Image 1 (spheres, one colour):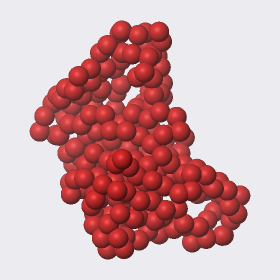
Image 2 (tube, each protein chain N blue to C red; image 1 turned 60 degrees about the vertical axis):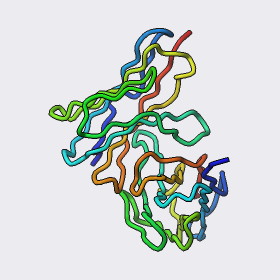
Image 3 (cartoon, rainbow over the protein chains, first blue to last red; image 1 turned 60 degrees about the horizontal axis):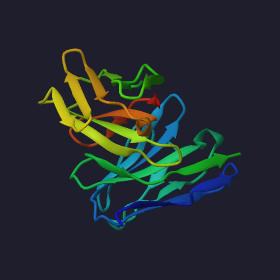
Length: 113
Length: 111
Protein backbone atom coordinates (compact mmCIF):
# COMPACT_ATOMS: atom_id res chain seq x y z
CA UNK A 1 0.00 0.00 0.00
CA UNK A 2 1.31 3.43 -1.00
CA UNK A 3 1.77 5.49 2.11
CA UNK A 4 3.69 7.99 4.18
CA UNK A 5 4.47 6.78 7.69
CA UNK A 6 5.52 8.82 10.70
CA UNK A 7 6.84 7.72 14.06
CA UNK A 8 6.05 8.26 16.80
CA UNK A 9 2.39 9.25 16.49
CA UNK A 10 2.36 10.83 19.94
CA UNK A 11 5.24 12.20 21.96
CA UNK A 12 5.46 14.05 25.25
CA UNK A 13 8.90 15.37 26.12
CA UNK A 14 10.64 18.01 28.20
CA UNK A 15 12.32 21.23 27.17
CA UNK A 16 15.80 20.73 25.80
CA UNK A 17 15.70 16.98 25.25
CA UNK A 18 16.67 16.24 21.65
CA UNK A 19 14.16 14.27 19.63
CA UNK A 20 13.68 12.94 16.12
CA UNK A 21 10.43 12.30 14.29
CA UNK A 22 10.89 9.85 11.45
CA UNK A 23 9.13 10.00 8.10
CA UNK A 24 9.23 7.38 5.39
CA UNK A 25 7.46 7.01 2.04
CA UNK A 26 7.28 3.93 -0.18
CA UNK A 27 6.24 5.68 -3.41
CA UNK A 28 9.71 6.62 -4.68
CA UNK A 29 8.75 10.29 -4.46
CA UNK A 30 11.44 12.90 -4.90
CA UNK A 31 9.77 15.76 -3.03
CA UNK A 32 9.22 15.55 0.72
CA UNK A 33 8.28 18.16 3.29
CA UNK A 34 7.38 18.79 6.91
CA UNK A 35 4.51 20.93 8.21
CA UNK A 36 3.19 21.92 11.57
CA UNK A 37 -0.49 22.56 12.19
CA UNK A 38 -1.58 25.03 14.84
CA UNK A 39 -5.08 26.34 15.62
CA UNK A 40 -5.98 29.39 13.56
CA UNK A 41 -2.79 29.14 11.51
CA UNK A 42 -3.41 26.11 9.35
CA UNK A 43 -0.41 24.17 8.09
CA UNK A 44 2.92 25.93 7.91
CA UNK A 45 5.82 24.45 6.02
CA UNK A 46 8.97 23.85 8.07
CA UNK A 47 11.42 22.36 5.58
CA UNK A 48 11.22 20.69 2.21
CA UNK A 49 13.48 18.55 0.09
CA UNK A 50 13.36 18.31 -3.68
CA UNK A 51 15.73 15.36 -3.82
CA UNK A 52 18.40 13.46 -1.89
CA UNK A 53 20.88 15.79 -0.19
CA UNK A 54 18.81 18.85 -1.22
CA UNK A 55 16.86 20.61 1.53
CA UNK A 56 15.41 24.11 1.82
CA UNK A 57 13.77 26.19 4.50
CA UNK A 58 10.03 26.64 4.45
CA UNK A 59 8.00 29.23 6.29
CA UNK A 60 8.96 28.35 9.89
CA UNK A 61 12.34 26.56 10.00
CA UNK A 62 13.67 28.01 13.27
CA UNK A 63 14.40 25.34 15.87
CA UNK A 64 14.25 22.44 13.42
CA UNK A 65 16.71 20.44 11.34
CA UNK A 66 16.18 17.90 8.60
CA UNK A 67 18.28 15.55 6.55
CA UNK A 68 17.68 13.65 3.32
CA UNK A 69 20.31 10.95 3.01
CA UNK A 70 17.97 8.50 1.29
CA UNK A 71 15.07 9.12 -1.04
CA UNK A 72 12.49 7.40 1.15
CA UNK A 73 13.36 8.98 4.52
CA UNK A 74 13.09 12.58 5.73
CA UNK A 75 13.51 12.83 9.53
CA UNK A 76 12.67 15.98 11.47
CA UNK A 77 15.08 16.80 14.28
CA UNK A 78 14.45 19.09 17.23
CA UNK A 79 17.85 19.62 18.84
CA UNK A 80 16.51 21.53 21.86
CA UNK A 81 12.70 21.46 21.90
CA UNK A 82 10.81 24.31 23.51
CA UNK A 83 7.14 24.59 24.56
CA UNK A 84 6.33 26.74 21.49
CA UNK A 85 7.10 23.69 19.36
CA UNK A 86 4.14 21.86 20.84
CA UNK A 87 2.10 21.15 17.74
CA UNK A 88 0.74 18.58 15.31
CA UNK A 89 3.36 17.68 12.71
CA UNK A 90 2.77 16.25 9.26
CA UNK A 91 5.21 14.78 6.80
CA UNK A 92 4.27 14.76 3.12
CA UNK A 93 5.66 13.59 -0.20
CA UNK A 94 4.91 14.34 -3.83
CA UNK A 95 5.44 12.48 -7.08
CA UNK A 96 5.94 15.75 -8.92
CA UNK A 97 9.36 17.29 -9.37
CA UNK A 98 8.10 20.04 -7.09
CA UNK A 99 5.58 20.35 -4.33
CA UNK A 100 2.52 19.43 -6.44
CA UNK A 101 -0.17 17.19 -5.02
CA UNK A 102 1.15 15.86 -1.76
CA UNK A 103 0.47 12.67 0.15
CA UNK A 104 0.42 13.30 3.88
CA UNK A 105 1.33 11.05 6.77
CA UNK A 106 -1.07 10.55 9.69
CA UNK A 107 0.56 13.17 11.89
CA UNK A 108 2.66 13.28 15.06
CA UNK A 109 1.29 15.11 18.06
CA UNK A 110 4.18 16.57 20.03
CA UNK A 111 3.90 18.11 23.47
CA UNK A 112 6.92 19.86 24.98
CA UNK A 113 6.62 20.66 28.70
CA UNK B 1 2.16 37.18 7.44
CA UNK B 2 -0.42 34.78 6.07
CA UNK B 3 -0.37 34.90 2.31
CA UNK B 4 -3.34 32.52 2.03
CA UNK B 5 -6.45 33.35 4.01
CA UNK B 6 -9.63 31.44 4.68
CA UNK B 7 -11.78 33.94 6.51
CA UNK B 8 -14.62 31.59 7.42
CA UNK B 9 -13.58 29.18 10.17
CA UNK B 10 -16.76 27.18 9.73
CA UNK B 11 -19.63 26.55 7.34
CA UNK B 12 -22.81 24.54 7.80
CA UNK B 13 -25.00 23.40 4.90
CA UNK B 14 -27.89 21.03 4.37
CA UNK B 15 -27.36 17.74 2.58
CA UNK B 16 -28.01 18.09 -1.15
CA UNK B 17 -27.29 21.81 -1.21
CA UNK B 18 -24.21 23.57 -2.53
CA UNK B 19 -21.20 24.21 -0.29
CA UNK B 20 -19.01 27.16 -1.24
CA UNK B 21 -15.67 27.52 0.49
CA UNK B 22 -13.65 30.66 -0.11
CA UNK B 23 -9.96 31.50 -0.09
CA UNK B 24 -8.06 34.74 -0.70
CA UNK B 25 -4.37 35.19 -1.34
CA UNK B 26 -2.01 38.14 -1.37
CA UNK B 27 0.96 36.90 -3.41
CA UNK B 28 0.37 37.54 -7.11
CA UNK B 29 3.24 35.18 -7.94
CA UNK B 30 1.30 32.11 -6.84
CA UNK B 31 0.72 29.96 -9.90
CA UNK B 32 -0.72 26.73 -8.57
CA UNK B 33 -3.59 26.29 -6.15
CA UNK B 34 -4.93 23.24 -4.36
CA UNK B 35 -7.64 22.18 -1.97
CA UNK B 36 -7.09 19.51 0.67
CA UNK B 37 -9.63 17.80 2.89
CA UNK B 38 -8.82 16.68 6.41
CA UNK B 39 -10.71 14.32 8.68
CA UNK B 40 -9.94 14.16 12.42
CA UNK B 41 -6.86 12.09 13.36
CA UNK B 42 -5.80 11.79 9.72
CA UNK B 43 -3.44 13.67 7.44
CA UNK B 44 -4.85 15.99 4.78
CA UNK B 45 -5.79 14.39 1.46
CA UNK B 46 -5.58 16.09 -1.90
CA UNK B 47 -8.93 17.05 -3.39
CA UNK B 48 -8.53 19.22 -6.48
CA UNK B 49 -6.10 21.70 -7.99
CA UNK B 50 -5.97 24.49 -10.53
CA UNK B 51 -3.19 26.17 -12.44
CA UNK B 52 -3.10 29.94 -12.79
CA UNK B 53 -3.61 29.61 -16.54
CA UNK B 54 -7.13 28.31 -15.92
CA UNK B 55 -10.13 29.81 -14.21
CA UNK B 56 -12.08 26.62 -13.53
CA UNK B 57 -11.44 22.96 -12.89
CA UNK B 58 -14.03 20.26 -12.25
CA UNK B 59 -13.80 16.81 -10.77
CA UNK B 60 -17.14 15.15 -10.15
CA UNK B 61 -19.02 17.04 -7.46
CA UNK B 62 -16.06 19.36 -6.84
CA UNK B 63 -15.30 22.51 -8.83
CA UNK B 64 -12.59 25.05 -8.13
CA UNK B 65 -12.84 28.59 -9.48
CA UNK B 66 -9.92 30.98 -9.72
CA UNK B 67 -10.28 34.75 -10.07
CA UNK B 68 -6.75 36.06 -10.47
CA UNK B 69 -7.66 39.71 -10.64
CA UNK B 70 -9.40 39.42 -7.28
CA UNK B 71 -6.80 36.96 -5.92
CA UNK B 72 -9.68 34.73 -4.92
CA UNK B 73 -10.24 31.00 -5.04
CA UNK B 74 -13.40 29.06 -4.27
CA UNK B 75 -14.39 25.43 -3.96
CA UNK B 76 -17.93 24.38 -4.83
CA UNK B 77 -19.33 21.05 -3.71
CA UNK B 78 -22.58 20.03 -5.38
CA UNK B 79 -24.50 18.24 -4.03
CA UNK B 80 -23.08 18.23 -0.53
CA UNK B 81 -23.10 14.94 1.36
CA UNK B 82 -22.65 14.20 5.08
CA UNK B 83 -19.35 12.45 4.25
CA UNK B 84 -18.03 15.79 3.01
CA UNK B 85 -17.97 17.04 6.60
CA UNK B 86 -14.29 17.80 7.23
CA UNK B 87 -11.82 20.66 7.45
CA UNK B 88 -10.90 22.07 4.05
CA UNK B 89 -7.55 23.75 3.46
CA UNK B 90 -6.73 26.02 0.57
CA UNK B 91 -3.06 26.01 -0.52
CA UNK B 92 -0.93 27.92 -3.01
CA UNK B 93 2.49 27.53 -4.50
CA UNK B 94 4.93 29.73 -6.40
CA UNK B 95 7.20 27.98 -8.88
CA UNK B 96 6.25 24.59 -7.45
CA UNK B 97 8.69 24.85 -4.54
CA UNK B 98 7.23 25.70 -1.18
CA UNK B 99 3.54 25.74 -0.31
CA UNK B 100 1.39 28.07 1.78
CA UNK B 101 -1.82 26.91 3.42
CA UNK B 102 -4.82 28.77 4.75
CA UNK B 103 -6.10 28.25 8.28
CA UNK B 104 -8.87 25.92 7.13
CA UNK B 105 -12.68 25.95 7.06
CA UNK B 106 -14.66 23.33 8.94
CA UNK B 107 -17.57 22.18 6.78
CA UNK B 108 -20.53 20.45 8.39
CA UNK B 109 -23.13 18.88 6.12
CA UNK B 110 -26.34 18.15 7.97
CA UNK B 111 -28.54 15.20 6.93
